[in-house]
Image 1 (cartoon, rainbow, N blue to C red):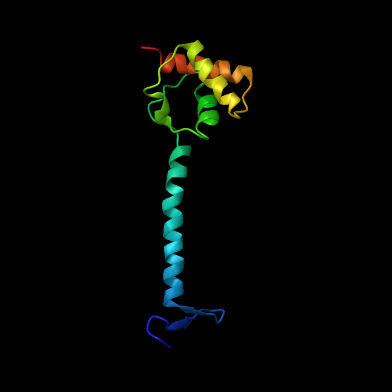
Image 2 (spheres, rainbow, N blue to C red; image 1 turned 180 degrees about the horizontal axis):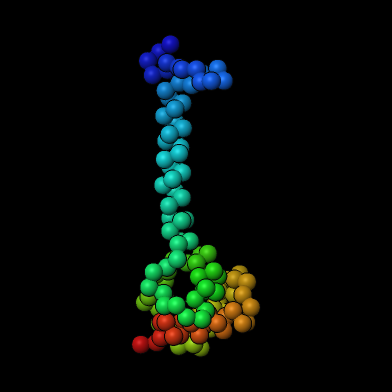
Length: 113
């Protein structure tokens, strides 16, 4: 066998070459690196005050948006409702109650300056 292609037999008698092992390792490493941003988006955001509406916001908005989106974007309740209804126009599936709850939370947590 050529260099780098020496194989070893596993318990099932299948020959696995060094190149195959390296390829599997590389694929696993890439998978872990690619999964990290997805896991970070699902993590509970730091700095969001606990108040009514936080869980709805986290569940609904963080499917698409990062927690940093709201830090510089400040609105009153009516402004936040406008933002949320635009998201409904883009495909978000929220009830009027959820929109009201999220708008009230955002207006309290990130008020207009």
